[in-house]
Image 1: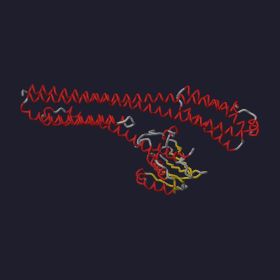
Image 2 (image 1 turned 90 degrees about the vertical axis):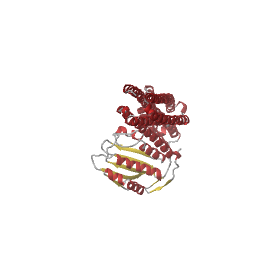
Image 3 (image 1 turned 45 degrees about the horizontal axis):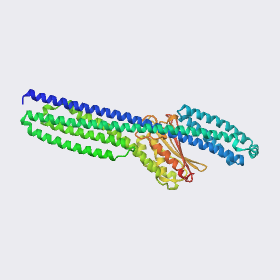
Image 4 (image 1 turned 30 degrees about the vertical axis):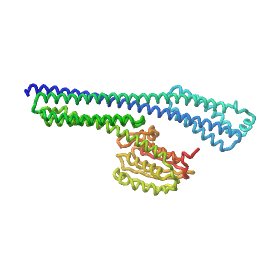
Length: 498
C-alpha cells in the first residue's frame, strides 16, 4: 500500500474516533452537570418539605398547648385544685416556647402576622389567668354564675384555635406545592438521564461503526493485513454482542426498579457502569489495534480512554455510593425504630466502663483520657442505651481539639424519677446556633474534616425519645461540650405514652 494512501486512511480514522470520543465526553459532562443540578434541586425541595413538616408539627403542638390551657383553666374554675394550676402553668410554658420555635421556622409574612395575632391573644389570656390565680376564690364564685360560651378566656382560646387552623391549612397547601416541585425534579432527572443515556449509546454504536469501516478500508487497501483485520472484526463483533446483552440487562433492570429513594442512584450507577463497559470495549479495541499497528498510536486518545474516563467514572461512582450509604443508614435508623424494646435494670457504671474499654485504642490514638465517675442505675433497653452512650463518647473522641490533650468525663446524677448521664469533653466545642442543627438528619456543624454521614446524633435523639428521655447539649466554640442524656429511672417507652 502506498504510504500516502495509508497515512490518509489513518488520519481520517483518528479524526473520526477522536470526534466521537469528544462528543461522548461532552455528553457525559452534560449528563453529570444535569444530574448534579437536578439532585441539588431535589435536595432543596426535600429541605423545604422537611421545614414545612416541622412547621406543621409546631402548629399542632401550639394548638395542643392551647387546648390544654383552656381545659386546665376551666377545671380550675370548677374546682380550684393545684393540679389544674400545674397543668395551666406547664401548658402556658409550652405554648410560649412553641411560639418562639414557630417564629424561627416561619418564612411567610402572612404566617408571621397570624402568629403575631396568636401572641397578642395569648397575652390577653395570660392577664386573665394571672388574675384568676391571684384570687382563686373570687374566680371560682364568679365562674359558678357565668356562661362559659361568652367567657373572654374561652373566646380567646377559640380565636387561637381558628388562627391555628388557618396556619395549618396554609402549611398543608405549601407542602402539596413542595411535593409537586419535588416530583417534577425527579421526572426531570429521569428524562435528562434517559436522553443522555440514549445519546451515549448512539455515540458508542457510531464509534463501533466507524471503527469497523476504518478496518474494512484498511483491509481493502493492504492485503497483507487482511487476516489481522478479520480477527479484529470478530473481536469487535464479540464486544458489540456483549455490549448489547449488557444494554438489555440494564433496560430490564430499569423496568423493574420502582420509584423509591434508590431509583436515581441505581440509574446513575447503571449509567456509569455502562459507560465503563463501553470504555473497556474501546480500550481493548485500541490496545489490539495499536499492537498490530504501532504507527496508529495516538497518545492523547489513549490517555483519554486509559486515564481520564476512568477517573471521571470513579468520581461518579464514589459519589453515588456515598448517597447509597446514606440511604442504608436511614433504613438502619428506621429498623432500629421498629425494634421491640426490652427493659432491664442496667448497671450504668459497668455498661459505660465496657464501652470505654472497647474504645481504648481509638482514645489512645487520639491522645484522649476518659474517666468514668459514679452513674446511677437505670431501667431501660440495654442495646439502645449502649448505642447512645457509645455514640456520644465516640463523638467526643472524634472532635477533640488538637491544641490540648483530650479529656473526656462520663458522669451521672439523679433527679426526681430521672437519671442523667453527662458526657463532657474539652474539644472543639459547638457554636450555639448549631446546637439543634447537629441533631438533624444529614446536618453537621463546624469544620468537616472527619468521616460521617450526619446521622449519629439524629439516631441518638430518636433512641432517647423512644426510651422516654431527652438529649441536650451545652457548648461554646473551642470550650468543649457537655451532652446530657436524661432517662426515666423507671422505663417508660415513648410509644406507650398516651
